[in-house]
Length: 290
Image (tube, rainbow, N blue to C red):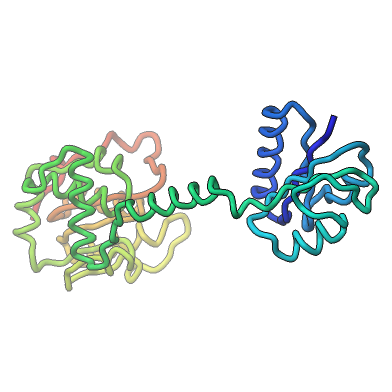
């Protein structure tokens, strides 16, 4: 019974070699004869070792498209035979080398099919205009979450999903009924933020950054001290927290202590919680508007 050696170039990339090994298993199942993979270079086993240690007839199945140097020089040349007929090779075994695959109409049909699929595939042009990117992202978030972008609350939720890249974030957003009115009435007033990145993202001029006030104190974050510092100086302000939960804590302490906050917009990160004995959750009803 003859055996088959499937010879290909070989690669340092494992996925290419695994493809050849998969082909060998399928050939073996279809033909009912042993099929081995032999590489010309860059991988093991080398086809020369396989043919040297075997006995009997062997079919050399070339997994090459054309008869280039590897086929003519490295394989046919070292075997000392021609493709397409049984001959005794220089290795002393009777071999039959199959022609390269490139002139097969089946190979052309496969190539034609793939090129046709590429030509018929829809081309999606990615938008580069910033306003187009923003609006298309907002529309996607609205459709995914069932939101109405004409409603300012829903538009805020869609913007949260767009800004975070996380649809789930919008689902946990709380918006008080009086936020829009409070925001409009405070236009032109001071706004205190917890970080410079938040300040850079605001289209607003009168912004104070917590880190620019208060200095440092052991046992307290700079965000906490800075927020307390600015609110004590200003008396009343809008607050935007995009990162530090301790900055939000400071704002709520200011409010619950009788200080005035126009509004609070907050999305602090982490798993911050107050210690035992510090009271229940903060409520906007406990804060006095300016």
